[in-house]
Image (cartoon, rainbow, N blue to C red):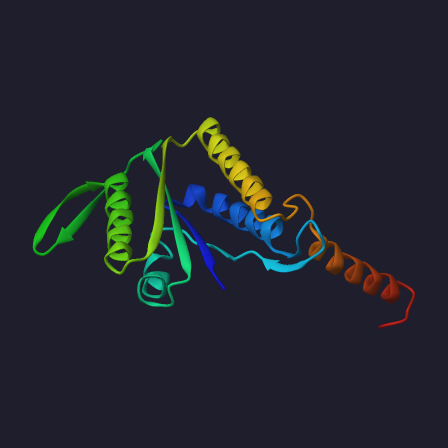
Length: 180
């Protein structure tokens, strides 16, 4: 089974990764195509944040099974750019956080490429509601088109409806005193 890892660089985009993982899973994870044939479509969505999750996940991404795509999301111009002291091989100096994030993302991308791993990099100009909304719209369209090409309905959630039905019946029975 293939996985798709969305890895925005920066904590302010953490929830975008969670949102995309939800969109991907509920839209493309389908048992049936539009004609009722069993197809088991979809891939495993993974939300991660660079650099927080980079160390713990990159080993798997770079040398584990070749069954994943890593999508890097970066912001070219950060709203605030704090500089921190960095010590690299005996040389110390101030480095803007934006430069550190950019260097970490590029290093991750290069390491994956050196092992023949798939990745893509989407860079937003700025971190504004407009730019985040445009990226979300892009992902909406990409998922809708992928669903159409796979001949599945990307706009329903029958698996979600199944667990909701079971959950609500269980709670109803508890209220009635049947399963306490």
